[in-house]
Image (cartoon, rainbow, N blue to C red):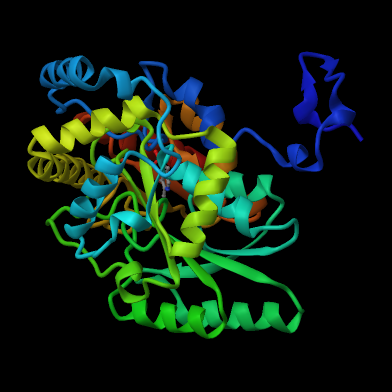
Length: 412
Ligand code: PMP
């Protein structure tokens, strides 16, 4: 059968029969295929989750990078350690301490963004057909990874307080009855992408207790945890159960994604395997990126920068919520208290995926809720709005344009 992904222009890919089975699961994610359109200047993009970097002190960063290169260039431009730059591994626990997490530098492994950490973990734990538990909805970029490794992604419902413990337990038990192997639970506890919700403090120990009882590893993906708009933080799953959790952090949202530096903190045996898998794939994470970030943490007031980011994103969240109240009273949404995203529920009968081309024609872009469900099997009644990047007045105009599209679709 012809796989449409492998047809370029009208020519069939001559290597079609040579690909591994897992390559046939690769699809351009709904977000990525949208980027080109959404990047047109006349379109207000509420689609991408690009961090807003306009307040970074570029001149001072340039000077610090130049000084670092003069001093440490021989090492920053050389191959490095597979587990990551020791100096940066010492500094990362200082960042994690802001969320009350006590991490040992020995257990830190630096990765090419937390995206690579998800990739390694999936590679290490998933044979084709093994079950990954995730929230419904969940981060689209991890769904792509799970699909590449041919995981069976089972998604568990969430509500305003995050994943529902009873639903998690029921799903694990039902899978076990079917003789299925549940390998890990991929969880986004703080300022969820795309749902914007945070797992309540009350549920955190419950989730851990359930996973522990069923011997399910927890992968705690936490790139937004320091972006609570009131400076609030939550108890990390890692703090509650250090031996049962692989924690993932990233500099992408609290500094800049272009360095491609993230990290994992894993129980020692898992950490050793992750290091080997990472070395096999990439030899070592970018030395230049790690030296630059290490210099930034040493020489800049990065805590103040994070506070500034919080205020900047809070103002954008406020602009979005007030625009929603004004223009889209027929929709439902949550008011996130951190992070980048609002999860918008459409009036009955509307389909976010089907409506998207009309929205783009009306010069506003979003991501259809279907992107956040394995195989696009659900989520058409929701869409994700990102408020991180546009200016507040653009957010307002974007929501106004969206309301026109919704109104028209309701008439259809
Ligand atoms: N996890 C989540 C939930 C994300 O939103 C993102 C980026 N959008 C990532 C992981 C990957 O981030 P990075 O690789 O830049 O650290």
